[in-house]
Image 1 (cartoon, rainbow, N blue to C red):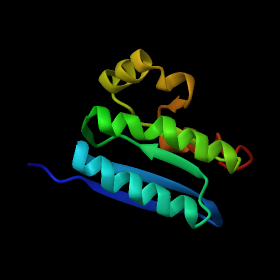
Image 2: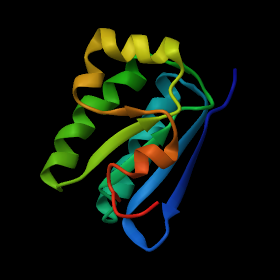
Image 3: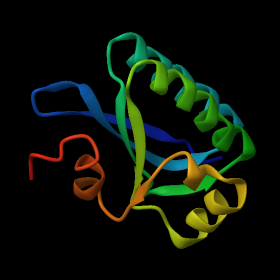
Length: 121
């Protein structure tokens, strides 16, 4: 069984913005860990997430299910989430289940960050 690594990188001086990179499969067990990590970040004041899926190997229904619930929490905090580096296969899946109507998808993490920090580049 492959293990998933979830990397969190702060963005400059913006304490409310992070890049989260998922390396490996986001299966049921990993989804639980990912959700806990996201909730801890929210509690610490982070409300703007760029989720880099460049190294995502697989996403289960449990993994997908985290994001709609997260959307409500982010709206309450005037935050948001943008996906970056999403493979065409995952984009198609996200489109089929309607995630692309909730969260934007950008080609790179730099483009995704512009959703939150439009004056910087």
